[in-house]
View 1 (cartoon, rainbow, N blue to C red):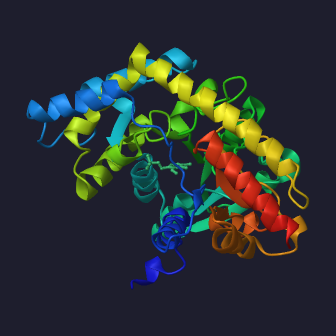
View 2 (spheres, rainbow, N blue to C red):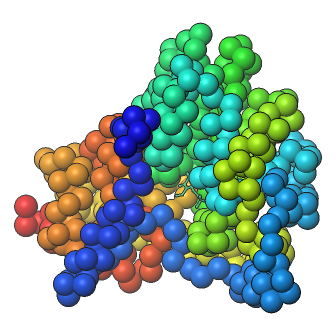
Length: 386
Ligand SMILES: Cc1ncc(COP(=O)(O)O)c(C=O)c1O
């Protein structure tokens, strides 16, 4: 294996899913709360459009940066939701948001650079930073601060080698949501030190109170902002592979070149189907998914908080719970392993998101209420018998 791959962690969810599936093959019952994808099907207008486009011959390469109409629809939608006005020519489509994270980091970060990111965090950031030959610099997200970063701590980590901040809100794995003042403060710091901001906003439409603040709420940010978003979570399209980025005009060619030389383009029928994500009908389907997530979140949080040794914040966005299980007196990995093997509940240890995740578990609540209730009973019985 090449040296650059050592120390890289993949997404633990796929490995836990394989272990859970193996247990099920042996006849065991498992509640799946490990994988980060909606349990809903893709809304039917999108599916129908995809099938129609395939039949109409949309089976050829697409332009490297993506199909213009999709880029226009994305730009129009972002410009309608946020004060910053987005030019479609600054948008690039990729097969999934993860590919956009890699495309951005590998095309703008140099070996020896440092990239600061709040952690526990989605593992792709650290992986892309390491593969770029740069140094990942984690800033601890504290439960006591609602898993929002502390700007003073971020400022302390800035050195002459710092190139970029990576943020993610609503956040995976904690469900934490940044406030506008956090993003404004980070932008000020970026201006002072001439840094870029990569903001992953893939959960921007999955929230349970007021709309979360976005980097696109901050005036003047666009020339240092690389914004990642996509269709996997909001429109339940994980398997279609459709993500996008908004890139500063002077970095556009570099990111586009990376996409050109790696994946060439994103599947044509996927992009054409994605245009249907902007219809009113799909909007209604998305709202009903979010309402369902909301109910599940409350049942799950309330249930966990009744179990001794477990304490769980009520996340404002995304579809994950990140309960503190340090009261159980075991490592996160041990709790997660035992919950799977002894209780039939598949979840991830917080350490799947970096060392700062020790003491926590991550549960996805993208599963039915009855499965969540069954998981709660299993977790309670497991804890009672410790
Ligand atoms: C924060 C975050 N960013 C990006 C992704 C990847 O999205 P996609 O499936 O579009 O590659 C995920 C998926 O879990 C995620 O949680």
